[in-house]
Image 1 (tube, one colour):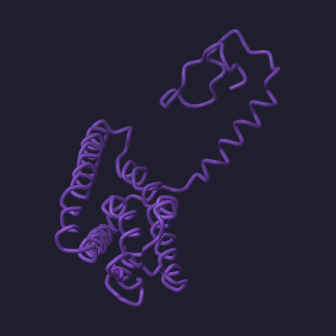
Image 2 (cartoon, rainbow, N blue to C red):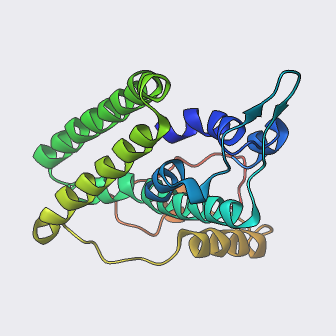
Length: 211
């Protein structure tokens, strides 16, 4: 979040890109690009009448785009799996663990909110008063510490067996529903279910009968 709120001003103020380009394209590598002079254009030169800003060259832009790719890859992998991984650590059939799961997610989203608030307040203040290098450096160090803490618990984590891609299951349901769209349904709604009574169920309705 700290990177996001500083990104456009970094692209326009440091990389000297047009505001339209900066808005369209978009923590370790970013921290380097804010610190190393070779990875950013020189400061704007000011004369009596004009201000000249040299735009970033191809190498500098290449490093920047690589940074974006790595960030997108890491963020996408983390956000798509962290909630599910947290839920896997608790047995939903055990009432005690079910309560602990609710406690976990309450704290999980609470600290996400605290982190977001810190990013858009404290880190923005540091960017203005100290510099972007410190802000991106703090983000990088924080991620490194988080990875170390996560790895310490590797032996205690519950790793459930993968059931395959959810996209495959979605397409299987669509194909099966298409094939059975004209099938006559039984009068007894209970016979529509082939799972165990303990499994989660969606109540039967007269809409979308093929499902």
